[in-house]
Image 1 (cartoon, helix red, strand yellow):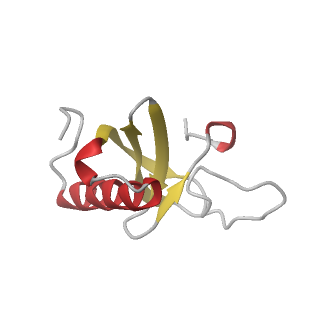
Image 2 (spheres, rainbow, N blue to C red):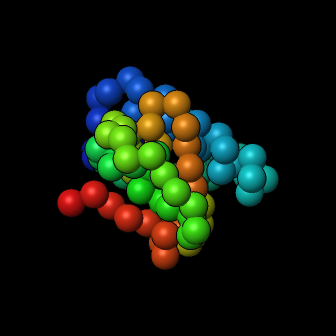
Image 3 (cartoon, rainbow, N blue to C red):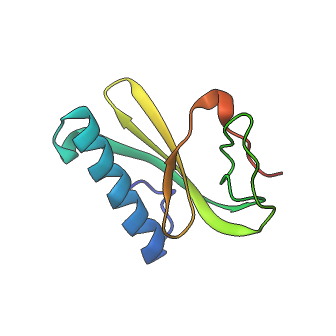
Amino acid sequence: MPASTPADPVAQQLAALVRRRLAEELDLPETRIRLISITPYTWNDSSLGCPVPDREYAPVVIEGYRIEAAAGDRVFVFHTDWERITPCEAGRERLPE
C-alpha cells in the first residue's frame, strides 16, 4: 500500500473493499486497481462529505476516510465511515476544514 496508508487495520480493510468494488465494477483484476491515498477525516454530517442535492443529512460527527484509487488514467474518490463506502464525484465533494 502507498506510504500515506495508515497502519490502522480498519483503513486497510476499507481500502481492500474499495479495490475489490472497483475491480468488480470495471471488470478488471484487483491488481489493476492502484491505491493512491487514504486520509482520515471527521465528517460533519451523515453525507460523509459527499452530499446529494436536495437531500437533508443529520448533523453528526462521523470518523472515516477519504480514499483515492486509480484504474489506468481514471481516479476514483470514496468517502467512508467505518462501515460504508460512498463513491464521491469531484463536484459533490465537501471536505471538512
